[in-house]
Length: 161
Ligand SMILES: [Zn+2]
Ligand SMILES: [Zn+2]
Image (cartoon, rainbow, N blue to C red; front, side, top):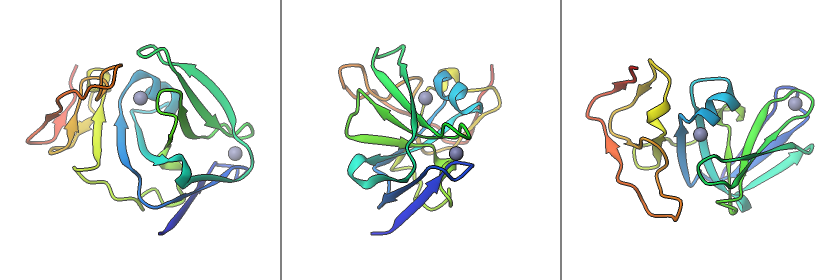
């Protein structure tokens, strides 16, 4: 299996993943908007056993999720403040990588089968949601783990407010 690396702006923190992500979440929630300072987070999800920090030690900001009450731990570089990945109290076996921190952010396969867009209800005005992918107004599952029915657009959808 191929290994891909990424790291922070200053280079103090480096990580490595093995194999393709389990799935990719494109998250438009307000937590991700604040944490990225941008429109949304592109978050490939890896099993913890396929993810490894290979240089440096991340600092951790534990954020309590408003929805679930569970901790989401933002792992970042203390020196340059780049956010590298998330770890979850709710999903302890996986990490969610900030895709833009990969040396090549285009290496993983993003398809309509493995990608979903969540929290469209709070997506920024003007954001384009692609056609043919599963979308959700908020989470894709309920707090007790039941799947929510996705909505799929036939043509790209521009968020208007
Ligand atoms: Zn750094
Ligand atoms: Zn989010």
